[in-house]
Length: 211
Length: 211
Image (cartoon, rainbow over all chains, first blue to last red; front, side, top):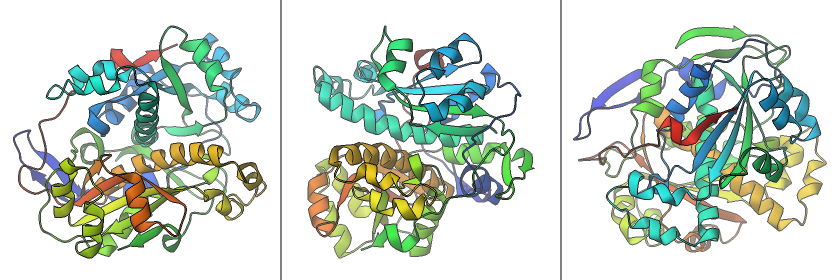
């Protein structure tokens, strides 16, 4: 990292500076979605390390609605694969680890612990199913974005997928709790021919404006 | 970055490895949401550099629904501030740059260009307003997560906010196009007392499970 400066405040020093070229390549400019994986196992410690990064990135009112179910090879993975879309089954069945990302639709129960200076915010969500679904959906997806980049930061390749039967996964794994699946991410080291040719991006003029 | 390896495939080398401690501190473990900003200007080149990182992270079917309006000090910022919640007005009025993140609800028009091997996917979204809103909402929020981390990677501090009148911002800036505001992010260098004490995170046992 170049141009690093530590800024001190009451909460301790905070690192500022530009991410160096290797870091940019790893997370953004050179990273790819993996479609095949090597047999190399992914340990529980490696999986835990992903969330130890992702958890620090911000959510509205610090609500942190995202939950993670890590699925390993064996019976758990078999139970998951049958709920994936046909085109995603083979690659999920071959991934050494899979993360089912879900949102806790009762995330508001944690507000008094997570936002100790404003515990009364919980009351705004009590009985408000639609408001909670909207808040959890947006903030959970933000956190899913952090999660994908954290997989890469942890030295692993991510293969995020939206093709699955969400209610089926919820019944299979979350029957006893109010979690709703939002994304499934294969995790491992790249296998043979792991990625497609890179797809185009919209140009700067297409999607960025200034006023 | 430690443990770096280049994996070659038809699309060229891809960088793999663990993000080093400085990079982790900068993006995740040590980064904070800024609530005050120094007067130091943020240049258009710095703003453009954020999106040049964020744009590479993945979206479903490469649809890239996120759009960015960068608002600079002056008349543009005045027009934005009046649509912010009262608690967010002073800090937005003092931020040297602000990004209004929106989703293009007609993102599907770009599918033939962005997914050239499957242009017919556009047809699945034609006339399907609800499906498009759901797809744009989820993928736009994923991209907003990438954007916040890209602000940090670009050496700037981010202050994301959900407290605003979205339809008001849409009428103010996007009256001529189908963009819907999803998040507003103050951008700059930290000012005086820029952050609160760090808030707690859920423990590993609270939100991660294994099967």
